[in-house]
Image (cartoon, rainbow, N blue to C red; front, side, top):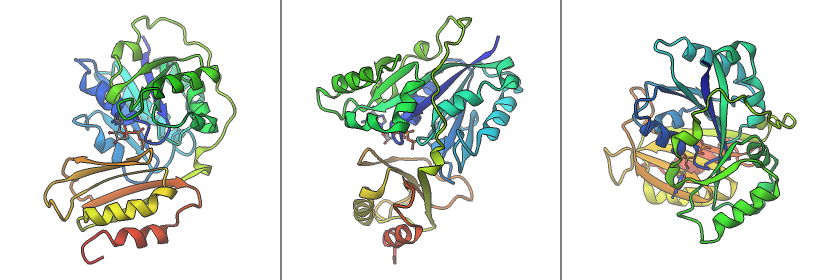
Length: 309
Ligand SMILES: Nc1nc2c(ncn2[C@@H]2O[C@H](COP(=O)(O)OP(=O)(O)OP(=O)(O)O)[C@@H](O)[C@H]2O)c(=O)[nH]1
């Protein structure tokens, strides 16, 4: 019986890791292996997948729809040789990934013998303006989806969900649209019981390398961060940022690791886990459209956030 694969796609910061976390937290004995692709050089997403570090394989510093496609297939082969074999495989793409290319890559004959793409889930930020769907990458992510999950409805105004559903319908996306509050989607929807159902043909569109559009810039430091100064830095950087996330300690609350998120124009801070041995104390990844933000400018702004900066 081929192992079903769930491909989780969606724009930068839409809520993919939150969905994968939720799924793994409620695995209820299911053996789920997760492959997480971070576009940046630091594997922040793999660290954000709580309590599942053993089962999570991280593919960082590139995009599995372009430069890391060989790595994805090798990783899947390795997972499928595990004893016991995973019962389900979840692949979280980077937010810049065009899933059409990944769907095509998963048709690899060696993989197909043992694992089959079962469901493509596209996580869509309900607070994004419907005009966001004019973006070709958004459209490609929606076009291959079987299920579209609307995230962040708790942050959106009352009509946002309805407007987003209408905008998705207008694109003639055949997917089922569901609400996903804080990543909550029933596992049975993602891994349907009728696993003998033949995979439906998917409209995969034309190839568009995502890496030609976005770049990631990493900033690390061995010093803790000043929170008010970080706020100022993010205010300055925000117009240029598509996404940022990081792990660090603050000067104000030493010894308390924090997770920083910037997505959809909103910055949040939450308690995190201690950094892995050998990792820099402060690690932040910034994703921006190519050419919009230089490393020099970023370093200049971020150095002001550390003590003595
Ligand atoms: N309030 C609220 N926040 C959410 C919801 N879903 C996700 N978030 C937050 O949105 C931010 C981004 O979520 P992630 O799950 O990391 O997004 P992602 O799509 O994995 O991000 P990338 O991998 O960087 O593209 C985090 O701060 C989440 O806590 C939701 O339903 N409600």
